[in-house]
Length: 117
Length: 113
Image (tube, rainbow over all chains, first blue to last red; front, side, top):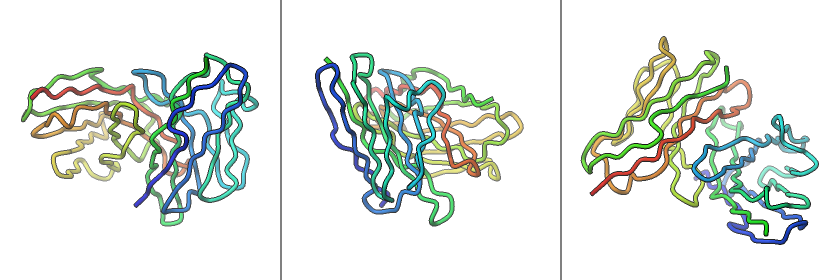
């Protein structure tokens, strides 16, 4: 149980393109979803937290107009990188958790490798 | 106050040996301490977690030791196997604040056959 699916696993696109990444909880209702960014050989950096039906809460230094997050249902959250540039190239990972059965751990997707040319 | 310090940065162990990774935290409000295992190109997977009301938790070959007074916790991997070679992250959170995880810097473990 507690499977989180992330799509696509890899995307390569030209500078200026907007890219949408989907994160789905397959077997549980994700009341909260998190989006992380990870550079090579570094730790995970939290970008934003989103609760279903609410606006996302962004971490300091993360541009909310650049990284659009939508959490419209209990099983789906999307991250859209708008007008992507080479410096946005990174490994983006989502996680999800539910609070429907008390405090539950975060379960992570397998990440999306974004490469902007 | 929100930092979690992890050491060592990298670790090489022989097959069958014990791998030990240490973490220290500052925020005494943290009440949940998970360890995650990450293979290259994959997302982190929850390995084992502990809450501060116990000093040790064991699941198979993996054990967390927790020292509340020292604000430290560690992961012990017994009988380490080449398949354990991965990056390990400790983390900490406050359950009452929505479980926002603060991660350590990570430890790259290599288990030689």
